[in-house]
Image (tube, rainbow, N blue to C red):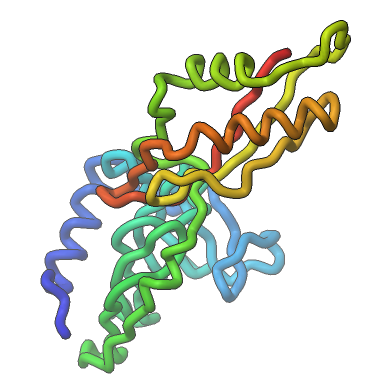
Length: 233
């Protein structure tokens, strides 16, 4: 299987956007990385990374060797450049492309093209998309929605569904957590900060009864999203 886009097109796309969005200056604020591209101290670093503007909603980052040679460039979900997302290119020390492909939520996915130091094609590597099936998002492009209305309507539904004993003095916030699955069903419903076990148990039961929700969507596909909602009693 071959990529739909040639190497030159991907490189041109990355570089053109970077020039437009940022200055590409390797002397900008640096994030020091280890040999396996994990954050580390300057004294232990094998590489460093610098931000280089944005491409739509994604942030551009470039990774250099400590002597200033480009090691990799690509897109990230966050301004801290900690979660890879979208097209990425890695380079050999001589500047030739080593590999290129796509990341989703910090994981390589799909077909990655690989090349030797002289530009000759090597065997492609396919990353199993099933590994990504259970990724749990905390923020999606389109967040899940309660079918009875917005978050305020959801909180109102929970409060109305909880029956406090007459004369109960329980007051304060309850922080509920749950996962909206890709089919909209709720799972892992729990109270992570509560006031009273009997109250917490009722909150969990009422939240479960609001299933299903409209699932969250990211990059055009339904995704699992963890929700945290405070309810004030």
